[in-house]
Length: 341
Ligand code: GLA
Image (cartoon, rainbow, N blue to C red; front, top):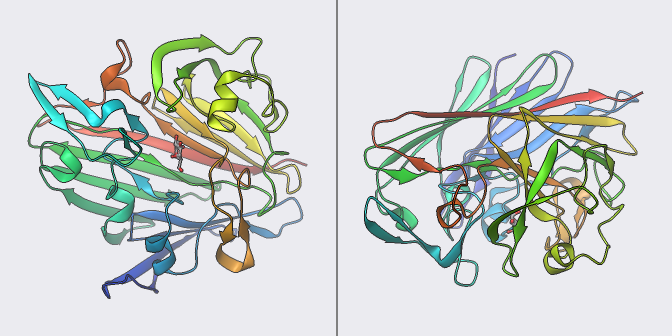
């Protein structure tokens, strides 16, 4: 179905924000705004045929600008943390903007989620593009980025990333949607399966140390599936430090995770060509009103951020986020929806 565009309010400086709505013939919709190339809403049917908005968000642009938490945003240039907010590449040291103590998080204080993108419809897809200039948040190279959202007839949201740079740089994008497949309430009852035998050990600052730990026999074992909250309160240093799950899982293949709303029956399977996925149980989400009278609260959603492993520039052997000058980067993440009976 054709993409429809509508006005979505304005930023503090008056910049108008636009929303693009994708719809398939069974009535599922996805709405993307050009502020942050953000997924603002994603409505799919529950087992009773009712449409449920399965992502947290706001109803106007100003709220996105005023609040943090990265709701639905496109994260870049590099998702998650870079320890010490620095890295060396090609014999040069680069200092990045610090926004998480001494570290760099989610592309910095003015990451991609806080930028205006140019947005247009291409057939039944929405394409967001921007040029991230050389030096932005400390990164080298002029980086041209394109994020394409497609909603298919079989209720799959596909997010494709494409990028090129004129100098060697880093690129590890993700989408930071907060999923609640019941449409609200605590997400601790959601059933979750993650296809990973290992996860990244974090230090006290939630930075991967470089060690990969087996999930076997730990609260991180989601291989057979269990409720998100089943072991979240366990006396495990990795969990208590982060106030819940905030860890990268090392994926074994393209199928990354299955999340199911215990009340709605809505089931979401995540596929990605990235080797990692950050499970974040909204541990620090501030309590406040969201769109449509909803309330946001800690543990009220699950983020499944597909990515290269965080802190890769400081951890020997992690897949590299380096994008070489003149090389094209393409990556896709797919969230496929179905309904359990
Ligand atoms: C990621 C990080 C978390 C937190 C959230 C957003 O998941 O790992 O520590 O920053 O994003 O608040």
